Amino acid sequence: MAQLDIIGLAKRYGDFHAVRDVSLSIKDGEFLVLLGPSGCGKTTTLRMVAGFIEPTAGHVTIGGTDVTVLPPWKRNAGMVFQNYALFPHLTVNENVAFGLQMRKLPKADIAKRVEETLALVRLSGYGGRLPRQLSGGQQQRVALARALAIHPDVLLLDEPLSNLDAKLRQEVRVEIRELQRKMGLTTVMVTHDQEEALTMADRLVVMSEGLVRQVGSQRDLYERPADRFVAGFVGRSTFLEGTLEAPGRFRTDGGLAVACAGDGAGRAVLSVRPERVAVGPSSVGGPNTGLDNSLPGTVEFVSYLGALIDIHVRLSPSDRMVAQIANRDGAFVPEVGQPIHVGWPASASQVFKE
Amino acid sequence: MIAVIRRRARRWALNGAAAITLGYILTPLVFVTWLAFFRQEIPSFPPEGYSMRWFAAILDQPKFVEGFRMSFQVGVLATFFGLSLGVPAALAVVRHRFAFRVPLSQLLLMPLIVPGVVLGTAMYVFQVEAEKGLDVDVLGTFYALVAGHTVIIIPWVVRLVTASLVGVDRSIEEAAQNLGANAFVTFWRITLPAIRPGIVAGALFGFVTSFGNLEMSLFLVGPGRTTLPIVVLQYLEWKIDPTIAAVSVVQILLIGIAMLITDRYVKLARVV
Image (cartoon, rainbow over all chains, first blue to last red; front, side, top):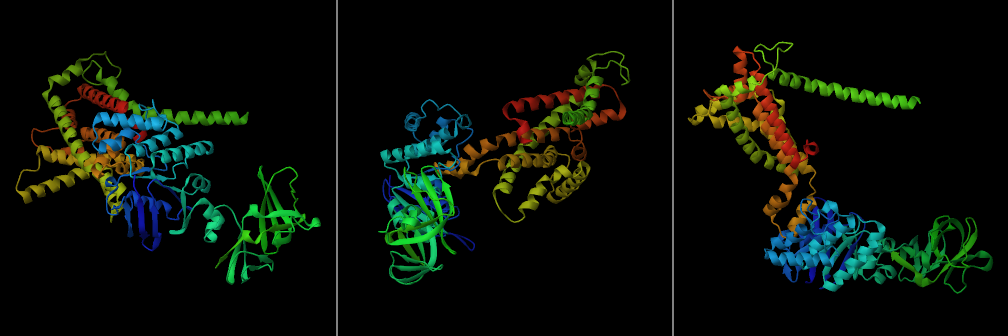
């Protein structure tokens, strides 16, 4: 295991900047997740670390050794591919043994290591099968075993769970995470699934348009998003366009005055997490008089999600907001067309300047 | 009710068309095979009786045996060279982007389209010029014949290997490199096994094409060096008896057996 450093990495295709100046430091044994929408440059970054794409600028070092110009086969990085990329003509044993054969290990050692690794991913006894004789989940575990068998310096996971069904995905997530912790693997995973990212990562990197938007813990990203993109991509947010008139005072384009946490002045966008917004009938003056913001509105749409209920509220002709309430006994669930009040504390409304 | 009848009618029409096509293809083969067992010397209907004498007659004529050996040797060697050139060509065309890629890939398939006589003439003229220019024997030599046959085998190899290559997932090659295999090892251990069906099928069809080729060989054979199709033609020029049919049956059987054996290892229906 080793520390992985990405320094000023960039990749340009003609005029298109796939990745611009990405710098990240992944500590020994850390699980880092690159999160972003498709086309944000996360996969390109991962493939540059693996050596499949030659960067236009920047460096990659593994354990302090600069590997930027080394071909993939000279980097000790184990990769799990999105479609698993198992060798179709080789058995499970041969797939897992491949990397060890390339390292010219003695036959007996290879057999032993293959057996150990397959036991690790709970596939003992499947060694003689061909990939096509396995289920998707089993293929995924073979791919993982194949990457782990070579005792890589870094483990690279390219959307490893996207081809599994939802239930299996949750199991495999935990499995991968436990293995990674037990073996102390320095790991970089790429995903566009934020739930996956949040449950697995030690630290997350949000990317868009080839840029790193924010690096931080789950809590950092959710509660202190660096910009509007992160606020919208990690979790959900309602955005209200408007102007920051004075520190703590925001006015929407629809004319609503909102108390917020934010310094300075000028054009800005205000973001509020739906679950921080309380709702109450207007007849009793809203949900809670103690909240910094209490605004009247009309319910436009109610979407029932089971444990949670989304309420879309029209505050002004140009301002609309979503409140998410827990479906508890005695909870106030308004109906479409009903006049209600929404309320939230100033600390829950974040302002991003434009 | 009407829908059921209509569906049935459609199925009958389809099956009928398939049967007619199959019959059309098989009829000559059936007749040739039947003819090979006629007892009388002049092929005429109805047969006067049946015998195996024409198969025995093949072995009595050293020309047939010689022609068969020649065709086999040329076919095997030309297939070998066809693979050596065709597989890398298919790889280049499918995997790399370069100027004139599309025209080149079409050029590689040209020998399939150009009439054999034209190809033969061109090859003949070329070899005459080569002989003049290089001042060595070219025309009529065994290797010049092999070279000619290599040209008609290449398109089969290119076409079938290309078809297999397109189906190969690039990421398995990346996975191999990620695990420590360099470019050469990756090709040898991963890509080659993945395109093996295309290679085997290309070799088989190329060989069959070479074995049955008449028009081009006519221009390229030297004195005393004749391939089986030429022997058959020469024989037919002065005599028509069921020996030729017997030769054809042997040829059909050999090719059929080769296909059956190949099909055991590589499902031909998947690549062709």
